[in-house]
Image (spheres, rainbow, N blue to C red):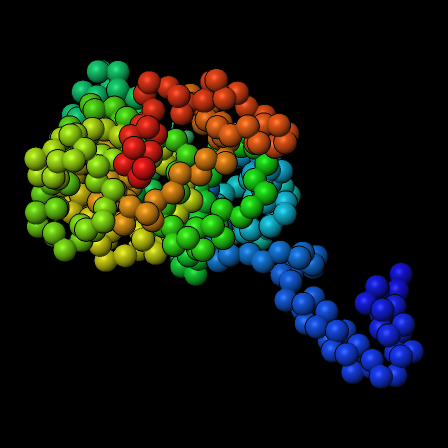
Length: 364
Ligand SMILES: Nc1nc2c(ncn2[C@@H]2O[C@H](COP(=O)(O)OP(=O)(O)O)[C@@H](O)[C@H]2O)c(=O)[nH]1
Ligand SMILES: [Mg+2]
């Protein structure tokens, strides 16, 4: 088939005095075509951000990983072909790699986490940590007895952003196995993050189990006393403080946090001097192992204290589910357009447990 631009060119050339304009138009079209991104040999007329889809996952979670990849590809990535990065504390099996590559529409890379970042640091009292896990298990605290869960939480709190495979990326979208995206996502959230100077994006906000973080807040308060230079003057501390308009030293932690199994965020924040100091301070206290600090409250408290509040964004247009909660966009247009397949009535946004009203009140 003769390209449209060539036909236009031939017609144009019949008119001698329009030759110059015609050539200029043709050249313009040519340049535009060169600007489109090229993925695995196919040309796509989209502009991508410096961003990746990121999944920490085990080989045994292959089917759940594929469920998530299928969802995000169909709802979003088939139009963009963002690359994927998969991380694991073990080597990925050949089967895992082959299946995942077959489903992802962008480039795929697999990384193995250094064992030093997936083990207890040398200064942890191993007996104390073991006793604490036993006690938490007996108390019926979720993942209370699991050491690997603690490695995972510590890794996701700090080390993940420093992985070799992420060094050249600015933004990531955290994807967990077996999650649901219930709405088509026509616009690129990464582009939104860049254009609006956002550093942290969330969809669900809820309270943490207090029994997993008995001394977390005390440790954060100590950080704020020792390193006041890192507390942002325009912070969103009111999201995590009780009472919300109190100051960090006099307030309690209200347990509200962004549910980190979904995150779209700026890796440069987690690699910043301020966050590195925050993570190191928390890590030195041993709370990831003596208690069971989750990466969600750690990330959320850091975002609320260290970032300007307008760098945090609630992605209302994204319908999302991770057991046991789902949330659904609130506007009519998302539903009458057929973009979404979820129930607003059942959305976690309206649950008595949701911390979203608190967020919305803070930024209103
Ligand atoms: N490679 C690896 N990934 C893990 C391990 N434990 C948890 N993960 C991943 O860490 C994330 C959170 O774990 P998950 O079991 O979903 O915890 P939950 O969402 O808090 O119930 C998921 O992406 C898991 O695949 C582990 O031991 N090894
Ligand atoms: Mg999960």
